[in-house]
Amino acid sequence: MTIKVFYKWAVAHILLFSTGCSVLDSPNTGRNDSAYQIPIEIKGSLQNPAWSPDEKMIVLTRFQHRYNEGPADLVIYDLESGNTKVIVSDGYDNVNLPGSVWNESTEQIIFSSSREPHDEIYLINVTRPGEEQKITERDELVAYEPSFSPDGQWIVFETHRLDIEDNGIITKYKIDGTEEYQALTSEHEDCRQPNWSPDGEHILYQTMMDGQWEIWIMNTDGSDKRQVTGGLGDKTDASFSPDGEWIVYSGDSPTMEFANLFIIPISGGKPTQVTSFNGYDGAPSWSPSGERIIFESSKSGDDGLQETSIWIIDLER
Image (cartoon, rainbow, N blue to C red):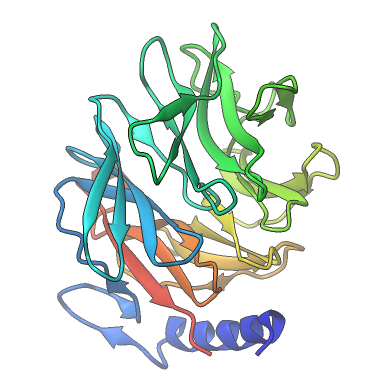
């Protein structure tokens, strides 16, 4: 089955279980979909899951206390054996983004760290934990939320001035330092969470518009910026499908108490709801095979999150 045909089947099945025709309705979980929890036996708030290129493992951020409350560690979980390995833990906030953060070509994972003097981008080779490399270094600018280009030679990330939380700028940088930092969005906007498309042609990001977050897409040189999502409610935490034709994100609306997961074509249009849960679902990553989406979830809402766990939902053929 080709990828495009597969996605037509997947959307049809998603529509079935998101509208209640094929559900797992457990009073203990509050879920009305087919998602299932990954039994990761490690304490803390487990967040931002992203797939390994072979789909056998995931990397995630473990906040040691509650949701977004550090210090935070980078953890690899083996889906086949159930083994857990902490690869970065130093008392700082070490955070990966969902999506394209584990590169197949270089066997590296990209992440941000709050190590002194301020947040910068680092990478680590998964075969040599402990040998971390600092990528960005600027005196008055911080760097967050990085993702890789498909060839592993470039990163894209959010930056803003030190001690200023707004006005995020999407910035591109070549890892070997042979190119200058390239601002792809304006400092007068607030743009965050960039993710590189698998074909290397596009970068998605979220931007604040009229008091809510929307998903946009652009070429890798910053040209041809296009808004993908619309309507009322925040849309955040976006990443691409493996063929680059779809975007998965976490979104809410006036009719929803909590954010759930949605997919939408990169050309825009009507989104399709993927998860159905009386609680928060966020930070999704689409598997390399296109058959699964992994995400963080909690029974509480955004204002009351204590900790999140990691879940998967299969996209049925």
